[in-house]
Length: 211
Image (cartoon, rainbow, N blue to C red; front, side, top):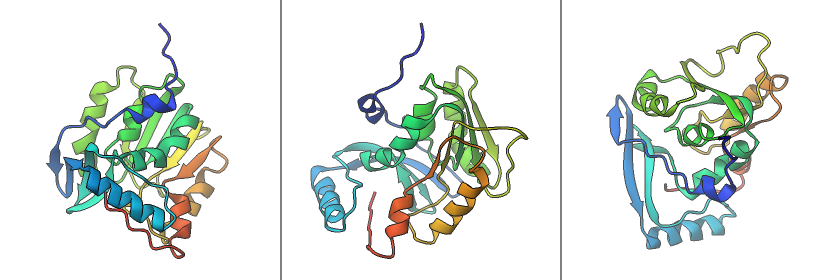
């Protein structure tokens, strides 16, 4: 039976079910956001013109040297949503993270292959086996390499490319984003970078995201 495309609501219901664990500097852990914490975050976000809201619940997050890198809260789901909805054919992602986007893309029938470039072998060792076990259609290829130095196969064109190699929202990220967008400008139908709008606005507004 042919798989149906997922709706926005169905995608929002997907959680990263990757088990807790540690490898080198990296750690996967569960955490709880209570109503008070969610309300405080959302109020701060609204005061500063942000759009990354959350709701109470139990989530998974990735830490590096004790600092939070990413999670599967609604705020971060929405950061990736436009890319997910436009992903098709051969897809490239720069940055593995904890793999929530992989979790979603492996379920999309319109995605025929998924190549992920990740510079940290420790992170690959921590995260990749979980998603490899789920990859029943052999779509996923995770490569340990620097996103700026790795070269796609000659003649390869992608349906979508996503750049997500930064640990935090920072105005300094914009120049790196521009380099990667130039690199794939003629190789993809669509590309975008994680929180590019927020990074471009960083010098104008003092964002403070706690999850």
